[in-house]
Length: 209
Ligand SMILES: C[S@@+](CC[C@H](N)C(=O)[O-])C[C@H]1O[C@@H](n2cnc3c(N)ncnc32)[C@H](O)[C@@H]1O
Image 1 (tube, rainbow, N blue to C red):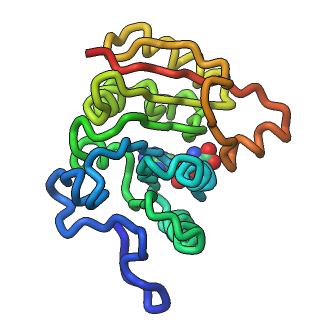
Image 2 (image 1 turned 90 degrees about the vertical axis):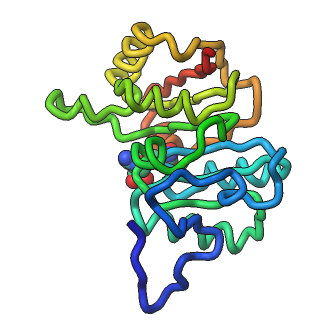
């Protein structure tokens, strides 16, 4: 959970810091005053370049970054402050907690999971979010009907495992994503992996039901 620092404002301007961390938030508490605006959630937003580029491109939408590292959340919030964007916030919390305890059901039009930790060691692979039924169920519940989950990775083993996990799961249907369908900025980590000429693969998944 976030904690106070002597030298920094608390919570940060643009940081979502609930009064009560033990109940689900309402959409109005997260983005006050614009109930009709579409919502996108970036899980593991890192330093937030993708989040900010999306917020700049789509001022009519609202963007929430979820990130567990305090330093990264602070950086994102500083960038939001400098950019003066009014449609983007960040929260410091574990993705699984956000899904299971904080975010309201049917809140998001799109959820992004971009270059999540690939957990390459066999003994850690159970931690891969895309392979966890609880994660997929949580994203399904977070999305509006017809909403989408977009996933990208540079890790071939993770990609294959995600495809396999989805084959046994009826919550999502895979739809085409050549990459040209809509504006989709390169993320900070994607830029690194592109420089290393790694193969980047993605899944575009539509909520079923
Ligand atoms: C490899 S980085 C990718 C960051 C960003 N999506 C990008 O593509 O540049 C993974 C990010 O997810 C965050 N992260 C990892 N596990 C998380 C979790 N369980 N909950 C929230 N954030 C998490 C990490 O702190 C890190 O910032």
